[in-house]
Image (cartoon, rainbow, N blue to C red; front, side, top):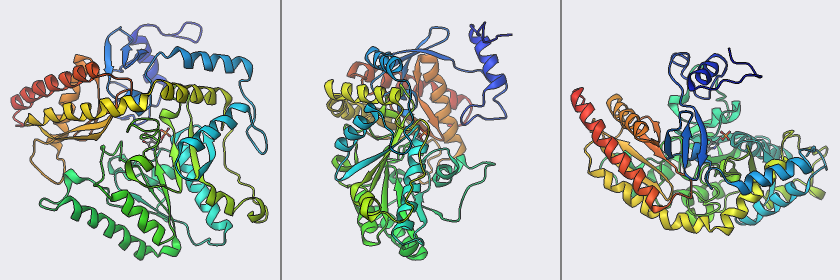
Length: 467
Ligand code: PLP
């Protein structure tokens, strides 16, 4: 038996130890004790290696997060240096550390408008949770305590804390847990591929905006605190909204005094070719932005919520209500080592022009993926820069994926795995979000493995009589 003094070394031993003791996020409890693990033990640039030395193109940047790629020595050194200098000190009350203050300043500079107030968290869930807590604190503090309701969207993903899991609208994720539902409402997500056949994109966008306004009227604007949205819904299936959607939703929020939280946990830090996509891509300045993942490129766990000065000023200083303690935050908010990783990461993204690189290779990636639409089992490929997916459709159902479409995606995934490409299967989709440092050659390899896997999957699905 492996012990701390004699750690497991072979893949079988690691897997056995892991199965005995770890509950993984999204573990299938029926199969977790028996199915084999993929043990990833090393990374370099946009590649990762398993414990048997097999190399893969990492088509998903770990979990949408390793933006600058693996094995970056500069970040490793920044982390080591800070660990030696000051590993930790409390961020509570009026205490801070130099790196936390500097990172807050940098984030204020990178976010649009007057989003200048930063609260650090240790994850994306923590960032979204803190955003909602701030919004409720704000409305209570300004004397509008009835403004509590939150509008979110079906198929959204905002995290795995009690509150953020309840905000999330992915129906397949709703299993035996309990979800808060008294103040949370889910409206339709923008999913142009699955819209009613024959409906124009403009009419579809108007339909979504209309549904939002109807929901506001149903709940009553005086009872609604905020709307929360991912710019492009990520885990829910890379759902790219129709043109004008975010602008239209923001205008409705302004009309009804509802705060707009843009959840840039996936889209932040370069994935769409900008540090934050809010203003350059969607032409909106939200009231709050949440981020995580790419903030450190996954080298340290971190999240942050960035809040408008306008909101903060209304409840602080001379405007603070009595006993205005903002009792939200974490032991590790603004952790010096994590901040050192984030600052170095941001410096690298700026110095190496990584956003410009994404703006160059991103359209090429989307264009190359489009070539896969010639295969019968592919319904659509879509995305924006380095956030994309391939949606399988063998059933021909235009409005909903069926079981055999899901089987098709899983079969493609199996062949990708064999050929050395990690993608993320979700329902009938193969989700792709490679490290931002991927070049055109890497993109060509990735798309060619996908094409070959789609051909192999087609043969297997035919042999099984599914097509
Ligand atoms: N928000 C979005 C849009 C996400 O995609 C995620 C995670 O995938 C989260 C929040 C939660 O982040 P974390 O897993 O760091 O808690």
